[in-house]
Length: 276
Image (spheres, helix red, strand yellow):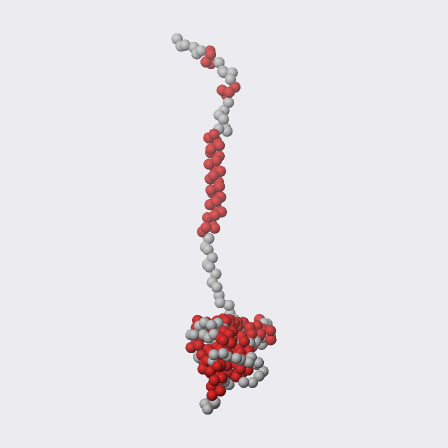
C-alpha cells in the first residue's frame, strides 16, 4: 500500500518573495559594467594615438645660405663707405683733442706740484736731494739742472738768515775797508788801528765811501735782494776778507734760486701748453 503525500507539502506557499527572480543590480553587475567601460576607453585610445605614434616624423629644416641679390634688384640705395664719412665738427674735434690731452695735462700738473714742493724745500736751510729727485723724474730731459744736485746735498742759508749775518759783519767790513794802502803815513796807520778796536760807522745809505756802500748792501739784503748786496760789496776789495765766507753762502743761495726759478718756469710753460 503506498503512502499518500502530505497535504502540507502539496499546498502552494503564499510568500510572494518566493516566486520573484534574482536581483539584477548586484555588486557583480556593476563590476562587469566597470570592466566594460575601461575596455572601451582603452580601445578608443589605441585607435586615436597609435596612428600618430607610427606616423613618420618630418626631417629637421636645413638652413640655406641667403643668396646675395643685387642692390638694384631690391631697389636699395648703396650707402657710401665708412672711410668717406663727413669730417667731424669743430666741437667734436675739440673734444677729441681734450681726451687725447688728458694724459699730457695730468703729467704737467704732476710736474708743477713736484716743482712747487722742490721750491718750498730749497727755500729752507737744509738739503733737498729727495725733492729734487722727485721733480727730475717728471721734468722733460731738456729742463734738468745738473749743477743743482751738488748744491742740493748741502743747501744754503735763507735770504733772511744771510741778511741778518751781513748786518753782524758790517762793522768788520767797515774796519777792513779802512785798511791803509802802501805808502800812507803814520796817521793813517794809527786811524786804522783805532778802527779795529772801536768802529764808528756812518749809516747814511745815500752818502759816499765804504760806510755808505756797506749800509746800502745791508739794506738791500734786508729787502731780500741778496744779488744787489753781493754786487755792492764787490766794490770794496779791502773788505773781502771778513765777507768771504758770507759771499760764498750768498752765491750758493743765488744759484739755487736761479736754478729753481728755471725749473718752475719750465713747469708752468708745460702746464700752460697742456691746457691749451
